[in-house]
Length: 295
Image (cartoon, rainbow, N blue to C red; front, side):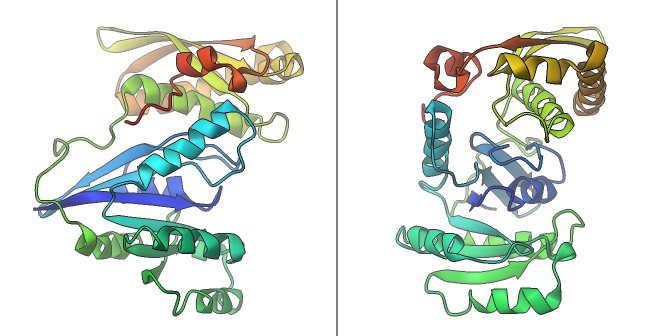
């Protein structure tokens, strides 16, 4: 049995979370078109007959503008410490620029094997993609380069099998049935946040937090009460929608996804509250589970 940790890093919206979900064949990390959708390191665990691979999803690289941003940067630093391999995900549709190349150089200095996954090849033109791939040829420290489409599951299994060669452990870190290190409560809050981001993606920024007020199981059903936290008073009516239509739609889509995850009926109640500048409020960050303690 070979075991180990693989950090997944890259720019915002490069496809890191989609790739993680494809690796473990379950949704453990939320996805939206907004930058900074992933806010902390999330483990996705894949165990088969001869290996256990622990993938560490991370926030996209960013320039911090608040305490939450500082937390996210710390999450990236924690993720790449003591791993067996660093998987750099690059959006093949957008092309490879100096940001990606400088990040590869940064991680090369850590002396950890680096594998590059060029993502979104399903929407990339070959004539445009090939010159971009040429930029990666001969870069010192890059062990291998793979082209994948996580959305269509093209090349993902080949990449996963190739990553096994970098595993250095011999003891399992998690039970064979585990797919993530996160609690059900955390996953529920992330599902709700994802639905808010998808529903309001063109109307509010990504400064949305989710507080789970109650999550109680009653027989074969769950009673969940949660609050959507926004930063400005002007954002509250957007999330609520006309006569509550938006928050009702968010709740319906969130409930359906939560029921699929919990494999049970769910009664979900959502509220919306304004907490000005909550991303710079230490007590609010702690309340919502964003802490810089090493996990």
